[in-house]
Structures are given as structure tokens and as C-alpha cells.
Length: 203
Image (tube, rainbow, N blue to C red; front, side):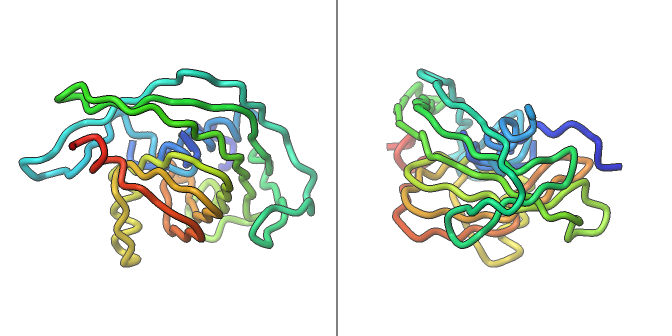
């Protein structure tokens, strides 16, 4: 039941059509090439269902990142340890990553170094009934997170309201769920600073 191939974007980890932040979506995609904990969204929309809405597209300018599988028990920033739930294996992704983000309506583009690094660790047994896997995404440095509809809904249900695109610096910890309909983020904790990418692209 847990053998479905995961393609999360949970960083741009990290980072995932309803999940990730890009980070989760991308990071999870990187994690199981092996998935940044976000939705597998085909479209990311800033300010959805308002007259200010616009789609965000992104592309890679430079990618020298490498994903390495971690041995269970290896330490991860934030006090976490690596755990696997085959075929999902704990991993770390590091190296240079530069990406561009574009307002599909106006063409305004910003380019950011979002190298991380980032880690994925999985619960040995999924914590959500029916889930293919659950786990924790951890990032340090600077990452970009794109949140699709599933992640936005799950975070809102927990009283957390994140922009569709967020640039974060510092220690970021997100819980994620890999469901049959795609991955999504369920929590967001940041010890650092954050910029609203949607606001930057709309200005």
C-alpha cells in the first residue's frame, strides 16, 4: 500500500496539485528519487478567489543539489533524527539552487537563491489513517515554499495562514502527509524570518 511513487515538490523545497510549498513538493520529489513538503499542484495561485489573484510559475536557474540517503538515527537539525518507512527513506539535500518566480499575469519575475539545505524524515508507521506516509520536513538557510490548495486547507484548519509563495530563512519545520491524492503540509513552524512571495510579485 505504501509503494506508490511520490513526487512532492514539500522545497522548491522544500517543500508539493494540492501540496508543498515548492520546497516540500520539490524536496519530496528529490527525497523519493530515491520524493519539500507541498502539493503536487499543477498551478499555484496567489490570492485565490479574489480579484487580485494571479498564477505563479517557477523555473530553475541553477541546480547543483545532491540528495543523500541518511542512516536511520542520524541527527537532523531541530532535534530530529532520521527515520525511514520504505520505500521512503530519510535524506538530506544540499548544494546550490537558484530559482525564478514569475507572476503569470504581469510577467514580473524575482530570482532567489533557495539552496537550503533540507531534510526529510519519515514516521516508521504513518500517523494519519490511510496515508501512504507521514513525516517531517526540516530546512535551514533560505528556501522557497509553494503551498497548493491541499496544504493551504490543512494549514488553515490548524489556524495557520501562509501565503501561496513564501521565502523563509532560518530553521523551518513542517509536518507532511503523503496521501493517495498527493502530498500536503499540515503544520508550519519557523524560527527565523519570512517574506511573502505573493506580495513581492504583485508589487
